[in-house]
Amino acid sequence: MATAAIARPQVSDAEWEARQELAACYRVFAMLGWDEMIYNHITVKVPGEDNAFLINPYGLHFSEVCASNLVKIDIDGNKLTDNPYPVNPAGFTQHSVFHRHLPDAHCVMHTHTTAGMAVSALEGGLQPINFYACNFIGQVAYHDFEGVTVRAEEGERLIANLGDKRAMFLRNHGILVMGKTLPQAFLMHWGLQRACEIQMATLSMGQPVHVPEDVVAVHQRDLSKVQIPGGPGKADFDAMVRLVDRIDTSWRN
Image 1 (cartoon, rainbow, N blue to C red):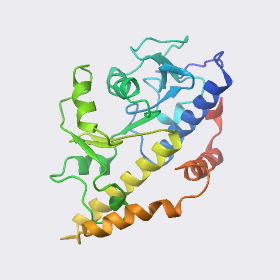
Image 2: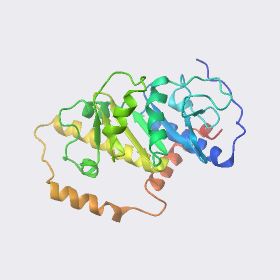
Image 3: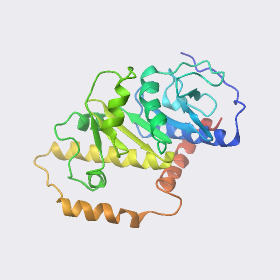
């Protein structure tokens, strides 16, 4: 599929800002190797529109996504702007259920990284054996694999299994995270991805050392002490966007 040229849609300043932030995020994921051909999704709610969100155009690589070609759809999957690209039903089905039912799920990210899929397929899942894993112990939900996510009725089980968590392993499938902001979700995904990468490396060498539960609790308690102003993930995400801009700034269009 050739990349179609799309003029900047007539949208509010707030929506355009959200489009640019989301497009930048797709480029960051591509730069970090978290892309999966034309598959997987990052979505954000449209500011001021509770029943609308933005999703990547199905058929484009993450490195081809820009602010203007993102597809705006409502919670039922209907396109809200003129856009020649289709939407992947698997992405809509999964992401819409969280945007519909969770007011704090502004941004939802789902990937099929090698490390994320490997840990999701491991008996016991994430283990408390490294710094980043300790960020998430007790904070991650699990959902059993039911096949490609295109059936709306699976949404009830996704919500039930997620509970009050905002990070989840889709077993045998990959990583799912969500946040009140895109940078917050980005930082969560980055940390969980690093935890999975290090777990893969550790388990390949032998028996790991498990961090005791009381130490994990202290670690999670003290994490807030290393945050910098701007909100969770803001400085981290901005740094990655600066790196992307050294490669290509077309995401802004």
